[in-house]
Image (cartoon, rainbow, N blue to C red; front, side):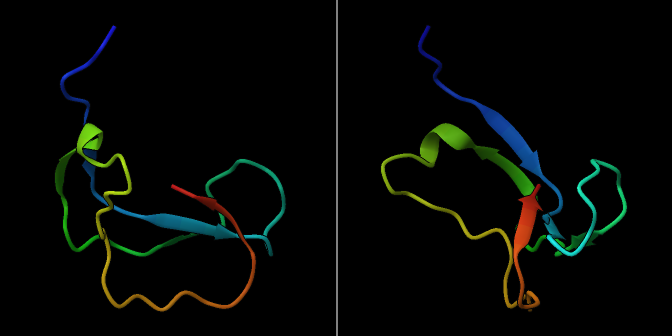
Length: 68
Protein backbone atom coordinates (compact mmCIF):
# COMPACT_ATOMS: atom_id res chain seq x y z
CA UNK A 1 0.00 0.00 0.00
CA UNK A 2 1.33 3.44 -0.92
CA UNK A 3 0.62 6.29 1.47
CA UNK A 4 0.14 9.88 0.34
CA UNK A 5 0.99 11.34 3.77
CA UNK A 6 2.34 10.21 7.14
CA UNK A 7 1.95 12.97 9.72
CA UNK A 8 3.81 13.19 13.05
CA UNK A 9 3.86 15.93 15.66
CA UNK A 10 7.26 16.84 17.09
CA UNK A 11 6.98 18.55 20.48
CA UNK A 12 10.38 17.79 22.03
CA UNK A 13 13.73 16.16 21.30
CA UNK A 14 15.35 14.12 24.08
CA UNK A 15 18.74 12.42 24.29
CA UNK A 16 20.13 9.83 26.67
CA UNK A 17 23.88 9.62 27.15
CA UNK A 18 25.81 6.38 27.58
CA UNK A 19 26.74 7.43 31.15
CA UNK A 20 23.41 6.11 32.45
CA UNK A 21 22.62 2.45 33.05
CA UNK A 22 21.09 0.35 30.33
CA UNK A 23 17.54 0.17 31.66
CA UNK A 24 14.70 1.65 29.66
CA UNK A 25 13.41 3.87 32.48
CA UNK A 26 12.75 7.58 32.24
CA UNK A 27 15.80 8.70 34.25
CA UNK A 28 18.78 10.12 32.43
CA UNK A 29 16.92 11.82 29.57
CA UNK A 30 17.90 15.39 28.64
CA UNK A 31 15.33 17.53 26.86
CA UNK A 32 16.70 19.67 24.04
CA UNK A 33 13.37 21.39 23.57
CA UNK A 34 11.94 22.14 20.17
CA UNK A 35 11.94 25.38 18.24
CA UNK A 36 9.79 24.33 15.26
CA UNK A 37 7.00 22.52 17.10
CA UNK A 38 4.39 21.53 14.55
CA UNK A 39 3.01 18.61 12.54
CA UNK A 40 5.34 17.25 9.84
CA UNK A 41 4.66 14.99 6.88
CA UNK A 42 7.57 12.53 7.07
CA UNK A 43 7.05 11.51 3.44
CA UNK A 44 8.34 14.97 2.49
CA UNK A 45 11.64 14.12 4.25
CA UNK A 46 12.97 11.61 1.73
CA UNK A 47 15.66 11.65 -0.92
CA UNK A 48 18.10 13.70 1.13
CA UNK A 49 15.55 16.31 2.25
CA UNK A 50 15.95 17.18 5.93
CA UNK A 51 14.37 19.44 8.53
CA UNK A 52 16.03 21.25 11.43
CA UNK A 53 14.01 20.73 14.61
CA UNK A 54 16.22 22.56 17.13
CA UNK A 55 18.52 25.59 17.00
CA UNK A 56 21.70 26.45 18.89
CA UNK A 57 21.54 23.69 21.49
CA UNK A 58 24.72 22.69 23.30
CA UNK A 59 25.09 18.93 23.47
CA UNK A 60 27.64 17.70 25.97
CA UNK A 61 30.59 15.64 24.79
CA UNK A 62 30.10 11.89 25.08
CA UNK A 63 28.34 8.93 23.56
CA UNK A 64 24.63 9.37 22.94
CA UNK A 65 22.82 6.10 23.61
CA UNK A 66 19.32 7.05 22.41
CA UNK A 67 17.46 9.93 20.79
CA UNK A 68 13.70 10.34 20.91
